[in-house]
Image: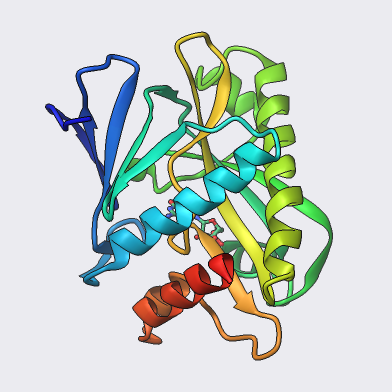
Length: 236
Ligand code: 5GP
């Protein structure tokens, strides 16, 4: 499958059309951004690691009955996947409090939440991805019906129910993550985007070491080694 016209360029990926109107190709970039693009860098090999990690995790989710846009990994930096209409809601799943939850609500960093929290952010860089409630999402027309919002929450919990024990068995705490969803040509809601240390937080269960993009956000260094460690744990 060959890349055709560039359809869209995001902060971490480029999206290309193909000869098949139902399929597109994502190219995973080495670029790193944080704080809504205010902090920028690049790390050679990061894109390929995220492509490989996402490929393994999409396969795992598909095996567990969760519909995703994944078709196949084409090469180090390219993934073939279904073309969808992306729903402009970032679905945030949290098992342990950190990041914006800690900042916004004062919950102590590292607190294991009494139940898994699912939140919605509006995927809009100009507005800085603000928090959404269901009424906001419906007023903005991000989905048509309440039951679609319920489905996003349900699917997000299903993803967590697969990934959290999977990573726990590999000695990693899945602290929190961001998912995106889209509608395929039949109107079915499926999981899209990527699942990688760019949009998940992984903490080593023994040392507490951060093995995700917080290494970049917090200037800790060692980002590529951390992402390689996540891939090795997945494959191990
Ligand atoms: P927080 O709201 O604490 O900043 O992020 C919660 C989780 O969602 C983290 O795992 C973070 O990586 C992910 N996340 C939230 N918003 C975004 C975003 O706009 N882009 C990416 N790549 N990840 C996000």
